Image (cartoon, rainbow, N blue to C red; front, side, top):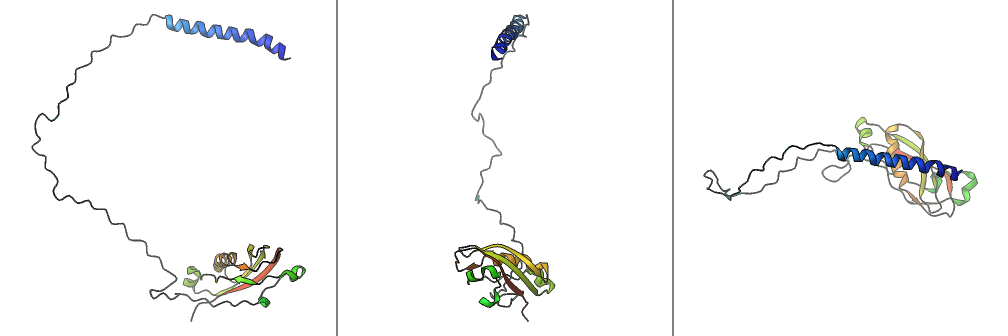
Length: 190
């Protein structure tokens, strides 16, 4: 099959190449006359033939940088004295607070680092308080994996609860622990 392709393709390629060369020859051999080029004017450059009368040097030039616009005012969680604007109830955790699936109860880990969630500004503005029940898994090294909300009194707290739980650290158990549950309480200070 490839021999037949070579026998048919080679003469066709030769004819196409010959045709292109003939077309190019016809373009070159045409008698087209170009117009006569125009003469180029002579240019003369001089360096300041006469002084400029209205030139005045800058006196006492001071380069100033524009002042940046003021930063937008952002309400902080802290007052000017450094105290929290909104106080959350401290969350104490004991091993009894952790519910673990009965199949893996022997591999329970104890919390090492537990970061308290920040009170969301929009919840505080609305005067909301509530609880969030979070379930998560623990990796063999004790880090929190796959945190999820099981129930919440207000969706306003969900994001901060998940962010806080994701930063928690437990003692390594050597195996994966599933379905660890904990409850977070969000309460405004009186």
